Image 1 (cartoon, rainbow over the protein chains, first blue to last red):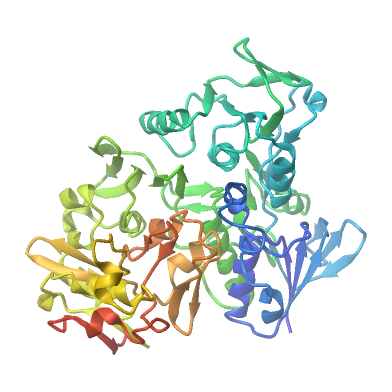
Image 2: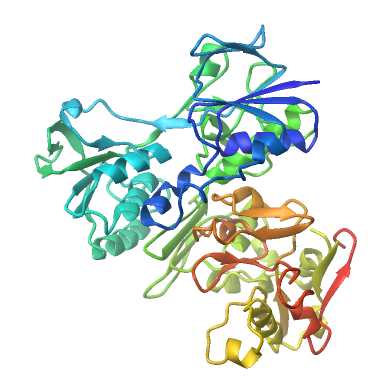
Length: 410
Length: 146
């Protein structure tokens, strides 16, 4: 009977467990969980603050999940080293665990730049875990002036989460636009305007350089007074365990399409891993939950003796603010084709007769049809692309293709 | 497993399936009371192409993207049927981002809904099929994709 060990207890770990069990019903699975919580969805913490969910409903799988899958979970434990030749993992408390197959699903951690005077700030938070959200919730009042450093996905979802529960929200970012990792300048301006209309203030192309108590001194020479500080500058993949064991790491743990690291019997999945991104044809950390689950599942199937590979993973995001939805996917290269109305923007990026990427603002119905065109590399001359740009529809396909899609088991 | 299939050559584009779907999932006994003067949120939708109309609903895929991608863990596959626990859904639309068929859409309250084959509502079998006047929508067992 195989012994599986999973470091981490997030979406990638769940994917790994379900992947293993799709092949091997009997093997022994042990999960090392740093957080003392049943597996929950981290991206939901902003929705928690908004009141759209609660700790119970945030559980990513049912209470009986580990029992149903025959897993032992060690809560509140941290893996500190991996010995890949002896196939052993050491925990912080000195315990050693042996394995036949190890999956490192250790996630990422907030990156906090070495700001001068940060230790003088009384109320400062990251925004990654449920504990972070609970601590932030306890610190804010209706009068709080909140400064969020970072106008990316995490910083802006945090802003939405606390909106209406605080006095004011200011967001700063060294980048010259909001959501710079997923939006181009024009689209970012559209989103920023909406957030500003809701009452959120921005200081872009500018960031805090040093702090003194309740004051941030900015690069531009301005200063901002605040009561609560949220640091959402970015995240770093937890690569150290594999790196120190002699495995290849870059910005994430380097993996192949089967999620195998450079070390034998060690796979990696999720935000700690740097897998193949089909949209750019190179390895990249795709730190989104769907990707974490799928990578975990592929790793699980493979270490259990099955065969799976990730296929065409691409960056993609669905995010919304105050009911205005944004979807993005793929790479923004090639010719840009735009459809625009007062409230909506759709941008398509076409190269070599293929849809390579898109940005949709305000109109996202059936966007998965676009996503599939990218992932399946559908030649645009085989579909009605003029209609596609206007509306995502299955009418763009030929009757034969539609018969394949809808006429049988898929 | 039986699934809903559409013979697009026979679809009249009457949209009756959308109304029957909305009614079956309304929990009400009277169709007029349930739907009259209301915006409906059916789980099947009729698409209009050039000289062609056809209805689209969940394919209950063998390996569903939506189940793997749901950030809330709200979508699962049980006995072959892809189901959503709407109490867990936060309306992030990630399932819309990944469904290649365009088969999921938000309901009245912003949480997502999808075809669950009417197995648990008052109809007990797909209402879109039962009510299709031209038998363009069928509920049957088929093999692998043609």
